[in-house]
Length: 308
Image (cartoon, rainbow, N blue to C red; front, side, top):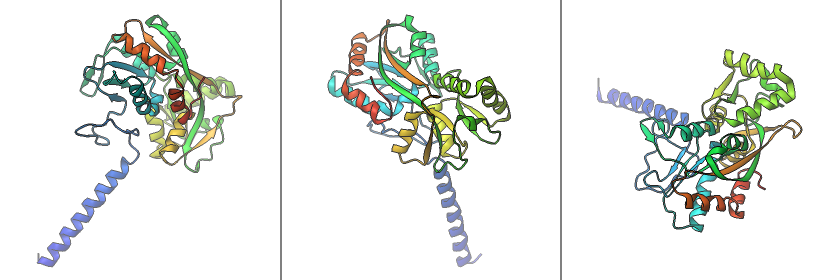
């Protein structure tokens, strides 16, 4: 092979390599974490490989441990920053924003493993929907209400499938990302709306028939997975909390919203509780007090929640 031909071959190979790299980068263009990450000497977040967006802060010797139902993840950086300003004595705070049912199992069992990481921290504070909190109230010594939310339908920008409301989720060809009621409280709330609008027949079509044929996908962690399935064109519609759409639009991600009328909707109430056996009881009390402040409530309002 002459020099000219060799150069052309090298250029062609480099072009293919660059195209592959660009293609792979595009596959992860919407991957979390979507929040600003805590400052550190090294940031080794690799989309699709090493990425743990729902563990936040300082895992070593924390002075406060908070378990938040995952759909509030967007609020966490601002909440923790504001709390530290009011209480500078707390420098190391660890937060989990996993599905509330998973967090409940972690509280009951005392540990969780993610990948190769085993976490045995006991929480001082747990925040979730009122049904979950009231169902575990024997664990808590103080419970406060701090926010409200409503349901909506997230669709890709432009709503290419022309979704008009909840009943459209039953269409055989419409791909739905549905929070799994087994560990997501929102899943049960959505099913209640199916029953309100179309009775057991609508619920069965979306939650049984379409699950079996694959056009309803039950998520593992809806507050990350539902938006990602919309963004990566793996779903045509996803019933989610209104705050999820507000946040994705703040990120300028290509999503739209199909509102659910108030008459058919539900209003979720979020409660926060300190645990009876909290290892850091003073910190728990301070954080519950902070969550009732105007500053904390303004952060929730920014992301589409309502507050008392």
